[in-house]
Length: 323
Image: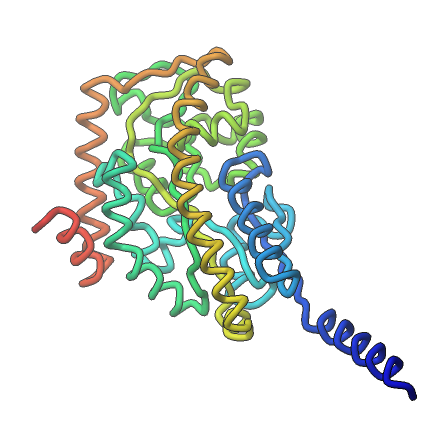
C-alpha cells in the first residue's frame, strides 16, 4: 500500500470514528413551538449542536409531541430522553422545593423573582440531582394573572368555577377560593376551555395569547401572583457520559439561554397583554377587594409551604426576606 493510500485510509477511519461518536438527543418540551420558552430552547439546541461541531445534536420536540408535559421529567430521569424542559412547580408534590417559584405573592415582579431564584437555585439544583437530573438553566414566565369567563370583584365570585390546575399550588388555590380544580396540561388547555372542562385558570398573558383563549374567555385580571420557571435538565448518566468539551459548550449555551429567556419573558409580558386586548378580552388590574382576599390566601399557602419545605425552604424565604 502506498503512503497516499495509507493516509486516505486513515482519514476514512477517522471520519467513521467521528460519525460513530456523534450523538443525537431528543428534547421533549410541553409548550407550542411559537412560545418563547420553546424558541429559546430551540436556539439552545442549535447552539449546542454547532458548538460541539456535531458531536452532540439536540432536536427539540415542542407541544408535548414526544412526551406529554406531565411525563417529561420522568422520561429524562429514566433515560427515555436525555434532555428535557419542564415547569418545575408541576412537581411540587414530589419535592416542595420545586414549588419555591410558585409561593403566592412572595414575589410579584421580575426583579423580586430573580432575587428569590438567585437564593433558591442551588437548593433546586441539588433536589434535581437527587432525581438523577443535571440542572442546566431555567427561564421565568411573566407574572401570573387570572383568566375568567365573567367579570369578578371578590373571591365569592369564584365559588364553583371549574379551574384549570397544573400544580400543587394551583390546586390548593382553587380549594381555598371555592373553585373546582381540574388537572389540565398546557397542550390540552384549548380543548378543555372549548368543551367546558375548565372555565378559568391562572397563568401569564403568554399562555392565553399562545392558546387564543379569547375564543372562550372574556376577562384577564392582573394579579401578579407568582412567576413560575421552566427548567431544562439532563439525565445525570447521559451528562456524565459527555466529553469535557461538550459539557463546557452546553453550559455556555445554557448561560446564554437563561439570559436570553429572561429578556424575552420581560418583552413578551406587555406584548401578550396587548394581544389579549386587541382580540376582545377585558384586561385590567384586579380590584382592591379581590387582591386583599387573594393575598390572605397567599399567606395561608406560604405558611403551608414552609411547613413542608423543611430547613431548606425556611432558609430560602428568610434570606429573601432579610430575616
